[in-house]
Length: 281
Image 1: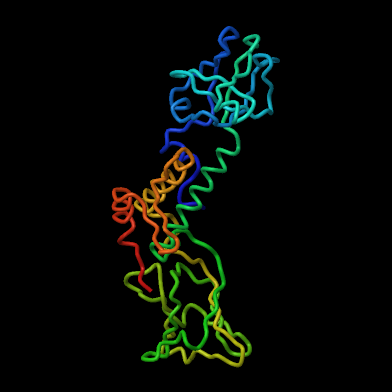
Image 2: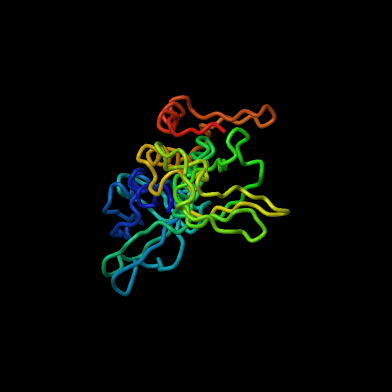
């Protein structure tokens, strides 16, 4: 499950996916019913049209991508291409059609939102060295994962929530049952970062030739993304999404110097929200 859903990002950005409209053949204008829908349109935004009856305003058609030309509050025109939209060359509408007409953002808009969320989540993960959702995985550990000062403890490093199967590194990959180990830190976890064999279990970590200890379970910081991490992801996803409309990007990049910066105000807010989750490894 993503930290933020597309619906949540739409709501945060004030983007409505669809609204109804009426057409005026005399002016080629479409008047839209939803102010939030209009407020997030740009000239060149891709849209699709449907109708409840037989006919859209002629010559408009369903399953056809059109491009928005902003005219006035709640008023747009449509163009057949992005270039025509930029040039202000609208489609000549010849009638109002019949029924209730609907205008919808194209799947490309949803793809942009999805990409913004994906990029924001990756940034949050990189900044905190954590993953804030539960994933079922099997991970493998070598002899160097055993602590030198306490050989009963296997350091697993990553955030661990639950264990479903623990196999020793002997030739038979013998299962170690839950009654024979603790997940550490017992007071602060989950998440856990080590597994300690109980002294009275009589079991030791084994690493026969080419054998690894394997830990199968759910991994991540938590099963549900914490609220402040969710807010940080939402803010960052919105920032990334809005870059599509920016002529001058707010990000400064000097790759040869290894410098990438974002606006100071945004950075402070983001840092404040995720600071306590940072894991230094």
